[in-house]
Amino acid sequence: MGHGARNLAALAAFAAGVAAMPLLLTNDYYLSTLILAFLNAMVVIGLNLLLGYAGQISLGHGAFYGLAAYTTAVLTATCGWPVGAGCAAGVALTAAVAYAISIPTLKLSGHSLAMATLGFGLIVYIVFNEAIELTGGPSGFVGIPRLTLFGHAFESDLEYYYLTGAVLTLLAWAALNLIDSRVGRAMRAIHTSERAAEVSGIDITGAKRFIFVLSAAYAGVAGVLYAHYLGFVAPSSFGFHFSVTLIVMVVLGGMASVWGAVAGAVFLTALPEFLRAFEDVETLLYGAILVLCVIFVPQGLAGAAARLARLLIARRPHVR
Image (cartoon, rainbow, N blue to C red):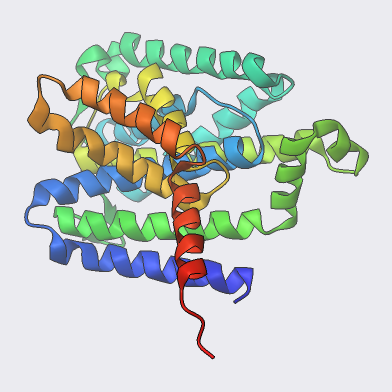
């Protein structure tokens, strides 16, 4: 089976799993957890393109997520824009801001780039808190309308689950195609050696800027869906802690793997919910599980799954 066929088979299997999952769930709480996991997975896929494939670290993706959420919240709830237009404006503004800050920051690399994006995230977080008349300040912004597209309002969690599942599948498909394209090969070359990639004729600045803006746009799509799902946004949801959690999702899921990004996001979104039953030692268990995962699956969940598949194939009896 070729690489393209394997991607299509994986996408079909994922879409089928998304479609069947509500049949196995016993209440809407699990459905809500999966919706948030899908939204996180959208951000993590974009961040994995930037970090896992292009080797550029960002500690500001929580800010991009929040910027899109607040933009559509203000435009639809305060200015009375149609929800679809507010969502489009949220994603467009996020991409435009990412393009603007990429001009100075992408001249940096390594820890300097991480610090620059961290500074951007902190500035946005402070604006969310201090622009009280616009954003509601630390108390948050309420009254965001439910998502409405083509005259249909997504009122129930089940409808929103299928919507976010479909959008996540579409974004995963776009990422898989990008990775196999000329741009994807350029990203991997930059990750390996920027000097060697430049000698090979790759436009380093253009490629890095493109993937940075695209990665921010992924966060923007998730951000607008998040705002219209909860109907409420607050600065605490988009701070430094969330940006670090996104990095952990990338690493735990598997660097340079789209499905690893999805697995890492779903695992780390669902894990705290399952650990709530151990409220006295919840944080201790969470940390211990992360440490054990890093020790025993250093290549991430995607790497562990691939290794298990190879092991099963190797042990399969040969048919003469």
